[in-house]
Amino acid sequence: MLGEHRAESPVVVGIPRGGMPVAAEVARALQAPLDLVLVRKIGAPENREYGIGALAEDDVLVVDEDAVRRLRLEPAELDAVVERARRELADRSAIGYAMRPRLSLAGRTALLVDDGLATGHSAQAAARSLRERGAARVILAVPVAAPNSVRELRGWVDELVCAQAPGDLWAIGLWYEDFSPTSEEEVAAVLAEAARRWRPRGS
Image (tube, rainbow, N blue to C red):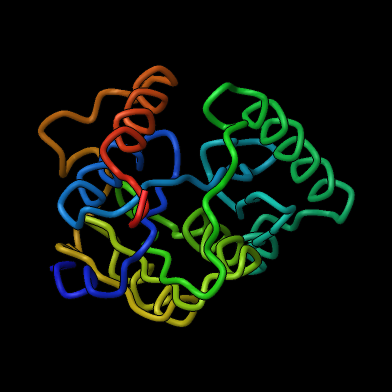
């Protein structure tokens, strides 16, 4: 489904942690370099699993205004959960693999890969962050997604490629045979393996 983009010499960008093994397979298939973009989900004050937005590198903030209204969050409550996400993202930025220099995206196609789209907040924040890094085109690629998220995200990226968009998604993990958590060590390993495999032309 992504083979036609090989001619664009894209940079494949994964979202740690769960998106990195998927992104690594895409990079291997397209013989493309692999990079990452850090994103942190913003959870509701009383239920951190209920996402109301996301924060990506370069302080790119996405807030689901409809969710904020439904929860009747006061500005101070929203500020508090956003600040918590900033601290958590800063902590993640201090992890070894996260401190590696990012690949240049200036004028290039960024192929953003995650393990799936539920609300789509993280992918939206990641896509905006890649624009900030200078990507000329952002293509979002996921194996599985909620149909509503597919419709929403099409407006934020140049192209969206999704293998399956079932109406009864329920949870991303249900569509995997093995959805065990991806460790920090696994993320570091796939990045190291990709760096060994890929060499810039002329090097």
